[in-house]
Length: 162
Length: 141
Figure 1 (cartoon, helix red, strand yellow):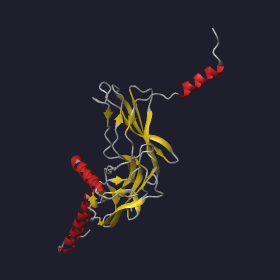
Figure 2 (cartoon, one colour; figure 1 turned 180 degrees about the vertical axis):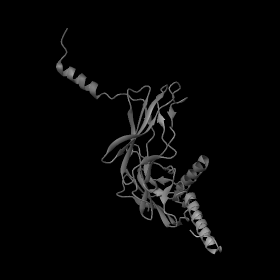
Figure 3 (cartoon, chains in turn green, brown; figure 1 turned 120 degrees about the vertical axis):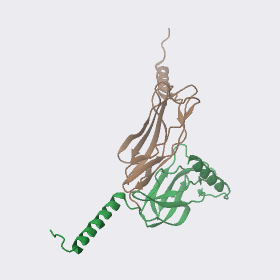
Figure 4 (cartoon, helix red, strand yellow; figure 1 turned 90 degrees about the vertical axis):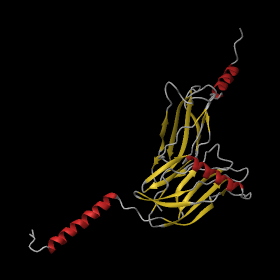
């Protein structure tokens, strides 16, 4: 898992190295997915690299789902990254609503930018259907079984009615 | 014996006060952010960092302090090495494990994170770095 992440980070850095010199923060391609967990859905973004322009340093970046921030990241005040930087991915991914579609946007700014700029964006990502909780499944099975029992009792001639 | 002029005494005293304490410990930059993991469940993610010590020194203490805007700071991560075999086992760098589930935070609040450390050559804990303020999301989009 760690090796795979390191490889993904290296690939992100390499793709950044191939991009032309720019006066704003640039990012390697941004890719993300939405998946179901026990209680809801989560969005996981693949490792990406941010590159501030030459002579500038990365100050902050954020990840947004449909324009709403889900991750706000700040760099070191006295030693901010001056080269390409690959942030580590949050352990749990970002909370999202199942069956809803999101566009994931990464904004970043360097020490000379007035405000964060969009450095990458995905197409619309569809979160899957929510996985039913085991308790809820048991509950619904119990309700159906009770209804069937009532119906059977009603159909049986001579069955005692209480 | 001639008395020492008061001006020289005062200058010496000022120099003593101004002389910085020689800390042998430093660290790689500290970078962190806050994300929403579930409704009302926000977490601070700290990127891996490395503490560097002077040759022959051992690590005594590492702490992460979260400063919530308007509420002051509190220690959110407290690290201690083995008493009889303190880290690092060899060399002069050490990277403490980052909490696998990240650090709990309050959604809708803003924080700055700072890293403090101390090695066997330091007189006390030393501030090794801090982030600018970052905001925890308030709700699930």
